[in-house]
Image: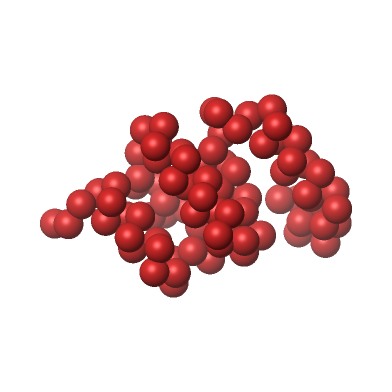
Length: 87
């Protein structure tokens, strides 16, 4: 995130790719956060699906400021509905 914020896109992408290569099975939610921060919503939702399929609870998505770029996307509501159900 720091590299991205500093507009060091190549370093940011390299760091993200390293995270994926070494922690794709245990950091899917964090990878989704990074993609959301980068406003790469398609990739963020892909990794959220992966995280939730590995039984990561859904509630943190509601409060994470890193996920705010996803909230206006229709897939966000669909994901919450799938994970939390209707009340």
